[in-house]
Structures are given as C-alpha cells and as structure tokens.
Image 1 (cartoon, one colour):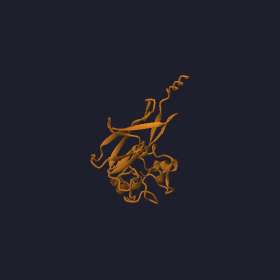
Image 2 (image 1 turned 120 degrees about the horizontal axis):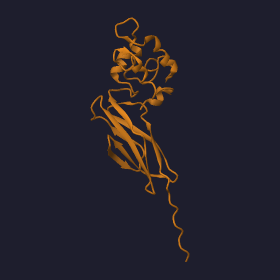
Image 3 (image 1 turned 30 degrees about the vertical axis):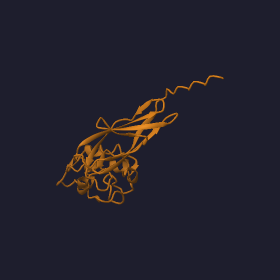
Image 4 (image 1 turned 135 degrees about the vertical axis):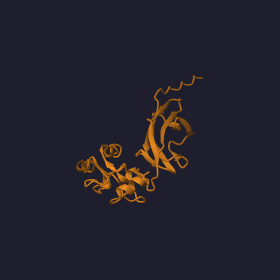
Length: 193
C-alpha cells in the first residue's frame, strides 16, 4: 500500500475585526457585538475578551454582551480572538466603549439628547439624531461645518444653540467636533445597535 500524503501545513492565521457597535458609547442592556472573521481554510472558534478577561468562547463569531450590571459612564474594552483548525489565531483591534443611558441605541446618551433637543426614544429621522444637523440621515462634513459660527459659545450667550452641543456640557467647542470621526459619512440607521 502507498503511504497517505502528509497534510499540507496551514501557516496562515485568520483575521478578525469588530464591525458593531460602531459608536463608542453604548447603552446598558443587551448589545450585539458582531465581527468579520476570515481565514484561508475556515474559522473554528472565537473568544470574546472584555476588560482583558475572556468572557465567552465557542464556535460563534458574534456575541450578545449584557451591559446591564455595568456602571454608567464607565469605559470597557472589547477584543475578539479567532482560531482556525491548525491552531493559528487572529486578534482584533481593541475597542473601548463607554456605558451610557441610551434608550434609542443611537450612540448618544439620553442626557445629551435632552440638551440637543433630539428625541430620546427615536433614533433616526428629522431632528432625532444629534450629529445630523441638516436632517439628511447622515453625519457629513456639511454637518461639521455648521459648528463654525457657534464655536466657543456657552449656554446663556447669544450664539449658543443646544442642538449643536453634542457632548451635552453646556459649551460648543472642538470637543463636540471630535465626536464626529467614528460616525463621519455614516447614516444614522447604519449605526443603531
């Protein structure tokens, strides 16, 4: 009899990235963490690592994270590690999420939405998503440019408009603009988690 051919070694590790939530502020409750994992042969398992601890492992590459018991305004890191049949692994980038009250799951706290005058319980639509100032359903440079005449205004002065105070601190500053990069050129509906 002929000897069996030796299996071809698989030196290629899988890759993985966290695809949702995109926003960096998330609500207390159930949050779906979704990933995009790829391998030249196939993914066999995944580990979900929160705050440096593996909290779930198995064949699924998505995870429902229960954030109910976490402290409001606390930050938590999430990372995903995936494995292939050869034992190779890939590790996602680490993402940090802040726990907020967010009834409509749009990434802006209920408190901020009270300041901006947007609806707390309706995620998308006219005047319902804090960074969408022109109500076209997305956050773009057109929205960012609307900040310019209001920069450095504070609550109570003639230029202040709470609709543009998207960090809800009573001042319109470059800090409000810095909230845009992760959501720039995204639609509200694509960000609701």
